[in-house]
Amino acid sequence: MSDRTNYKAQHEALIESIEKMYDLNSRVIEAISTVPRHYFVPEKLRDQAYEDMALPIGKEQTISQPSLVAFMTNVLEIGESDKVLEIGTGSGYQAAILGKAARQVITIERIAGLAEKAEKLLKRLGFLNITVICGDGTLGYPQEAPYDAIIVTAAFEKVPPPLLEQLKDGGRLLMPVGGRDVQKLLKITKQGKNYLEKELISVQFVPLVGEFGY
Image (cartoon, rainbow, N blue to C red):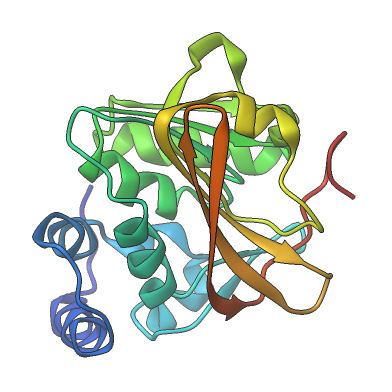
C-alpha cells in the first residue's frame, strides 16, 4: 500500500518517545517501527496517528495508544514460534503488531463491520499469518487452542474462564480487569493447574461484551 502523505518523521519520533518510556525487546521495537499506524485510524484522524493517544474508530470502539500497545506486547513475551489469540480486533493495529512478533495470530471481533474492515486491511498489508474471526471473544476460539499467549483488549470484572482453559502450560494471558471506568492490567501465567497473577498498571479500556462479559 502507498500513501501520498509521508509520516516517517512522526513515526520515528513516536518510537523514540516509547523507547524512553519502556525497556522493550528488539522484536517489539521492530514491530512498532514497521507497522504503519495511520492505515488503522479513520482517514480524518490520520494526522494524529503517531501521537501517543487512543483514537476513536467508530462503533464506540478505539485504537489503543501506541505506547500501551508496545507495553502490552512486550509483557506477553511472545516468541517467534508462538500462537497468539487476541480478543477485540478493533481496527486490527494490535493484531498487526502481534503478527510481526508471532508465528500465528487468531483475532476475534464481535462487531461485523470492524472485523471485515480489519481483515481486508491486514490482507492488503500482507499479514498472511493473521486470521480474523467475527464472534464472541469471551468464548475464545477452541478450534485453534491451546495458545502460547492470549491478549484481551477490552475490560471486565474477571477473566472469562474459557480463555484460561485455552492457555498452554506456561502460557501468558493479559487483560484489563476491573470496572467500566478504570481497570488494572492483569498478567496471568499458567503453571500446571495453577494460575499466577500479577497486577501491572492502571488502564482504561472499552467494556468486554459477550457471554462471559457485560
